Length: 117
Image 1 (spheres, helix red, strand yellow):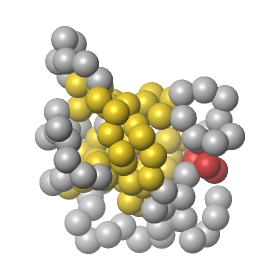
Image 2 (cartoon, helix red, strand yellow; image 1 turned 90 degrees about the horizontal axis):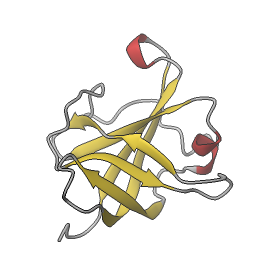
Image 3 (cartoon, one colour; image 1 turned 60 degrees about the horizontal axis):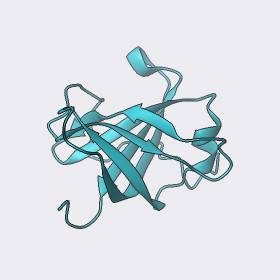
């Protein structure tokens, strides 16, 4: 992984991922260059207005993500009748977890850009 993309220290606003998420979405789906197909991840809460996904350190997806990248991601609601939304999203943080419950994973912080309507 590109050293510039890897955040070795968390931003002050971030904490360890917690669930449930205080947002209307429960998971997100996206594809990245070099990956064979779409990947879907559960969304976790890092801090107010900050969400993240956990990606195993052995996943080829991690190698394709960089802090600052933006892409359309498909967000799924916890409400089964609510249709998914495609929203422009920025990769805000990528941090490797070396200890605790999420050891062996990268925490990838996401930020939805613009209006959610």
